[in-house]
Image: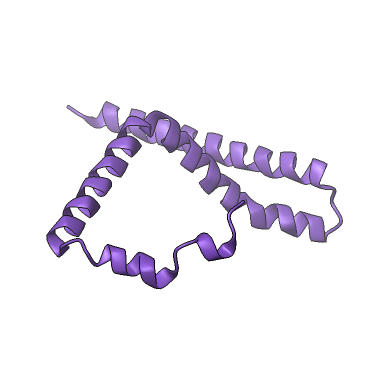
Length: 108
């Protein structure tokens, strides 16, 4: 393992960064941005469900914590909250389906 003295100081690193022109920095930044966006578009089939799962988990967290404060075990609280989320989702989908069917019937 290298000694702490072998590492470049912060000042040395920032001086090295100053050697590049603003145009070169802008090109590197722009290229990096394009690569990140292209990677996200390529991984969209994985990222979208993952981000949706994280969003739903964050929405459910207060309900699970509330149940824990009321002395409901976590092993019971999580399935209860997930069941409520699924039930609400089913009701919303059924309502949307009925609305869409009635709207389709009203179209001449």
